[in-house]
Amino acid sequence: MLFAIDVGNSHTVTGLYKDDELIGHWRLKSDRERTDDELAIRYHALFSMAGIDKTEISGIILASVVPSLEAAWIACCKKYFSENLEKPLFVVSSKSIAHIIKIATDYPEEVGADRLVNAVAAWEQHKQNLIIIDFGTAITFDCVSARCEYLGGTILPGIAISLDALSSRAAKLPRIDVSTPPDRIIGRNTIEAMKSGILYGYGALVDGLSEKIRDDLCPKGEDLRIMATGGMAHLIAPYASVIEEVNPMLTLRGLHSLYNKI
Image (spheres, rainbow, N blue to C red):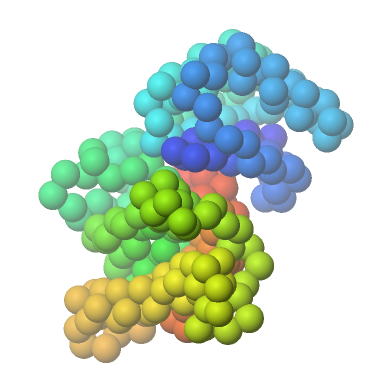
């Protein structure tokens, strides 16, 4: 089995693949203070509840954008999950996968591992020009050419950050749950107005920014596919007409694909 680990700023998403089948996946809060032993305790418990024997893990691949947690995860995996590895634990970076995807940016080492993993997964699936929108702590628009080149993209504050800023900076604006949509775009009360602003506002942002990126990425009108992933993708996708596909497991799929290429 392959143990795939994606450590993000807000959440860590992990999955277990048996051959090409994702047999289990978990999404937990990323706690920067977590030690290698604490991580092991958590995952021993999760595996036990799912009836999974950790000794069946034969491969581990890790992508992280949190250096302190990356170190803890590496120590955890080496100490507790490496009894039967067929290959050494693989850590995704711009250097480690440069032979798989060309990173055509000014400073390749600055590109987040998760962005590169998403690019590989999306290109493997469609093999065309792509915009991959990841709705996480930040919202990233990643551009990939039909020749499997990572070209860069844009970064803007995520939905949770915007909601936190509204409620913390404006005394009369409460914290709200946007998982239930407003009845109309014109809010008749404060909560409706905030929900409408976030959902319709981010949807319009995605549509408008995607069209601007399309003009730069495909100046001759080449085919382009726009995909979405990340924990909040399903909330915004209904409000953004350009999104053609939502794949919440894109990063895990990319990790699986990368591991099979190393």
